[in-house]
Amino acid sequence: MINAYFISDAHLSCKAGDWEDQKHQKIRSFFKSIEQQASHLYIVGDFFDFWFEYKYAIPKGHFTLLYELKKLVDRGVEIHYLAGNHDFALGTFFDQTMGIKTWPEEMNFELGGKTFFLFHGDGLAREDNSYRVLRRILRSRFNQKIFRWLHPDLGIPLARFISGSSRKYTNQMNDTRDESDYIKFAEEKFEQGFDYVLMGHRHNPLTHKKGEHIYLNLGDWLGHFTYACFNGTELALHKYSEENHG
Image 1 (cartoon, one colour):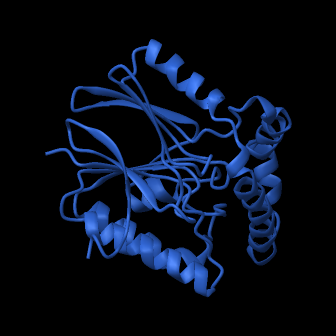
Image 2 (image 1 turned 60 degrees about the vertical axis):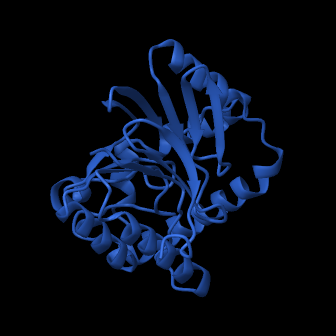
């Protein structure tokens, strides 16, 4: 039986605080609500507000969430983690220790007779020219190696500060953004033969249909708490609330 779930842009921080505690609790509650029926879980980027994997260290503040993900894996849920612009330095921890397949750029697959294309979505908008340059710099293996020379007690707070500034800018732009570049990109993928296109990054839940094809933007877990589910027949966007899934 297929019950595939898709989430993105939770931007979970390892910094303690009331709002962060609430977000962590909501994600854990969501995982608990799907653990019995989920066959697949696809994380479409920016699950963490910052993730940088040192050779011998990972952010300890994420231990509980990592434990919940591992429990899903142990229950037989197939989990895939697609890198976003905040958590692109995934390293080998998820694949080798957690049993979660990671994807550095994009992924496509067939499920239930439907073809899926997943991409976080950063750098697609026409106004993202400067970011596309920055993206190449940040994802450079050489530059990541240099960053690892910083002790985690320095590197993690620094990257967390930069990630927070980037996220605030994204949130401020939500109400004024034109989604046409993303819709155009999705429709190009439809022409290539994909039935479904799912992206994140914009923090705006969106359903766009063209014939039998569907593009979903997964929204976020900062205010919308949206996710998608494919039951083997239909793909749809949903809003999570603990009251309805208790």
